[in-house]
Structures are given as C-alpha cells and as structure tokens.
Length: 441
Ligand code: SF4
Ligand code: SF4
Image (cartoon, rainbow, N blue to C red; front, top):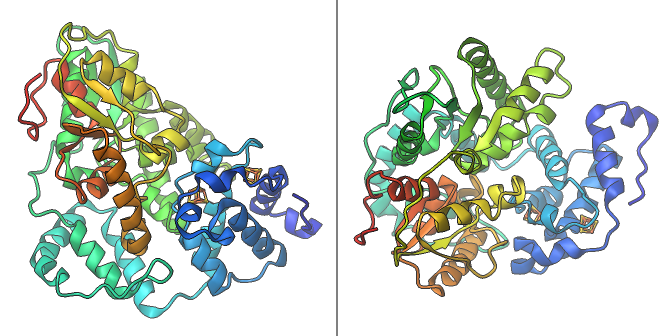
C-alpha cells in the first residue's frame, strides 16, 4: 500500500512503524474472510482491510479520529485472526494498538461512555477492587433482567453495556488463592524454577486455575514463585488505548521479574491467561523506545511462556488408560493468533487420555476480547451464540480453554462445564478433578 507521510511525520518512531506496516499490505482482502466483525456485519469498514485504510488516512492527515473511525476501530476485537490469514505478514496488532492510543488521546467520547471506560480501567486490574465490585454487582444482578436491551449490533447503548456487565458477574466468588510472596517447593529434586503470573481478573474469578498449574509443576520438580507486589500485566488498559497506564504496569512487573531472575534464577515466566501472555511477549516491542527498559523488557518477553509450552517440555508420566471424556478444545484467539500456539494444548490433552474434539470455525473469536463483551455486548453476544452452537455440535462433556475471558464468555451461553486446559492436565496426572465434572478419569 502506498503511503504519503511527510519526512517530519516519519521522524516519529510510531508513525515510521505504522508506515512499515501499511506498506506491507497489498489490499488483497484475504483477511476479510476470517474477520469476525466482517463476517457478522458485512461492512468493508468493519474488516481488517477497511480498518487499515481508515487508520492510514487518520495517521496521514494527522487529525483527531472522527466518530466514524472510532466506531470501526472500537468494533475490532483485536482477535488477530487477520494476522493469521494475511499472506503479506501485515502486523495489524501493532497498527490497531497505535490507533487505539490515538482514539483514547484525541477523541472525546460521550460522557457516560467515558465514565464506564474509566471505571473498567480502574477496577479490572485491581483484584481487591474487582472482588468488591463483583460482590456489589451480584446485588444488582436481578435488575439486569429489568433493563430492556435497546442496543443493536450497530449501536450499543449505555444500558445494554451495564446489562452485559451485570450478566457477566458470577453468582458466587471462590476464596482467594495463595498470596504473592509464596514460594512452592518442588516434590523431590528441583528441576526448574519459574515465576507464575498471578493475573488480576483471573485470580478473583478462578484461583483454581493457577492452583492446578502449581500442583502440576511442583509434582514434576518445578519450584513455583508467586512474586510479591506483582500487578496486572497492563493488557487490559493496553487494549483500551490507555498506554500510559499499561506501560507503567509493564515497567513495574519487569523490575520485579528481572530482580527475581537475578536473585534466584528463573527458567520462565509462566502465564495461564493467554491474553496476558500475548501482551507480555510483546513487552520488548512496547518498550522499544524506552532506553531504561528496552533491554529488560526484551529479556522478560523472552522468558514469558504460556503454561502449556513449558509443560510440554517436562518429563511427565502420562496416563496409560484412555478415558471416554470428550473435550471440546476452544482455541483462544490470543493463543492461536497472538502466540501461534494451536496444536500443543490439544496434543497435551490427548496425551492425558481425553477424547479431544476440534470445533468448527475455531478461528472465530467467542466475543470475549478483554472488555469487548461489555463495550460491544450485541456483537459479542452473537459471536458467543455462534461459538456455543459450534461447540454443541461435538457433544462434549467439558470445554477446555486457555484464557479466563473466553471461559467466562462461553460459560454464559452453555450448561457444559468450561475449565482451563491446565486443570484437565493436572487432573490426568494425579491432581484432583476440576470439581465441575461428574465423570471420572
Ligand atoms: S483483529 Fe479480529 S476483529 Fe479486528 S480486524 Fe483483525 S480479524 Fe477483524
Ligand atoms: S490479507 Fe494482509 S495484505 Fe491482504 S488486505 Fe488483509 S492485511 Fe492487507
């Protein structure tokens, strides 16, 4: 794609990066076929190619984003299916991340939307606040049924967003997991040492996920460190275009992880929420212009692994017996498109003795996408219906996924238990059952 940036514009490293990305696009449109919003809405401007044109024009003219440009960027899930499909290697992720920052800094949203976004950005990354908010939301849940859904695919309303937020709040909250600062010693001789990301929303909604990872790892000789004072990785606010907040969070964790690696040694920083994993693996890029952090960020990014990547390298005595439990594997976008981890979790589940079923249209997002299912509830709802129907077609006993956002989103549309892949791997290799299944291995 031909671009027309001035030399002065290209002096800005972000614009220079955007220029490189835009020039790689050859307008072929292959990406449109796998873009969930294009599939649903059929509007070229809600396709990757259409958004690329809008972003190009916005950057070249160097003008504040219009309401229309903002609308189409907001509708993008950042699912990155387009990056998997693109034959030219267009880095859409870095382009749309940059566009979101511009929107956040230069576009004035309606007051209620500004307020809602501010609340999400403050509450979600803080576990104590998030827990308190969920308890309050439980009281408001009955009201959700009274709120009429006046929103449409094209235009979500403030009330439809509040309704979606209340609907996502769980009926009960589990007890908190082990606190930061805890070190779990391995059973037997130590074969490795890792830091496990504690996460923000996940540690409130499903501490059982990291508990399963800790059991599996320590059973196989790995020391697991939960680092004190570790915070949110910044992924949530990064995807809302609030880069100052996201980068501050990234720098905070980078300092802690580097100090721990220097002090006790770390083979890896393991992540059980693939959305966070994709962001941490991108820290090197996100902080490339920061002289004080660029090298440290690259070091942390190189240490980051999805938990399944690390487990695949362990010597594990897999069960000899095969079970008849059918697992529908839901491939989280951040894992399959963001980190290109597609087969590994399924192979591990198969080695664990489960019957693993692929689901149709597995490249399409479930609609979770960070805060998307709150901010764009109608599109997210349609995507969930489609995902749940595809899952139901394989008649599973359980659904496995590697991302808490997907787990919450999918479980809102089905009665089939939804668990994290690591919970099944832990169960199959000697841990307790995930507690949701009435079947036995
Ligand atoms: S990230 Fe997903 S929703 Fe956004 S343009 Fe790409 S395929 Fe479409
Ligand atoms: S597939 Fe890649 S090169 Fe083709 S239009 Fe989409 S982003 Fe551009």
